[in-house]
Image (tube, rainbow, N blue to C red):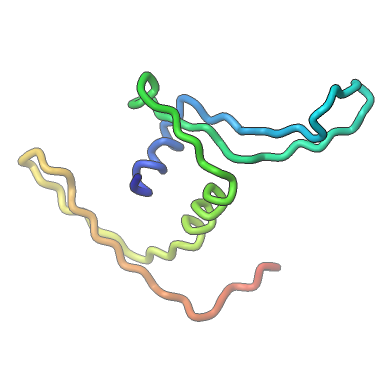
Length: 104
């Protein structure tokens, strides 16, 4: 699956549901503290709502978010075709050699 497809599923999501695991696996009383762990997310979009449901593990989801945040596109251009083809998009990236401190 391409990154663009995954992003569209998030943007146009019909289902975005966390996969939560409650620990410990036993009967829980109302006054007992429990640990809830996010394992991943279920997602689909309005275009595939009747056909498919995807599952994205938490580590993959986090990597996807980090890669998107750290993508450094500094310029883009689009050529629109009037013959029915999809537009052509060109992107330019700067590769930053210095990391920005996290405390800023």
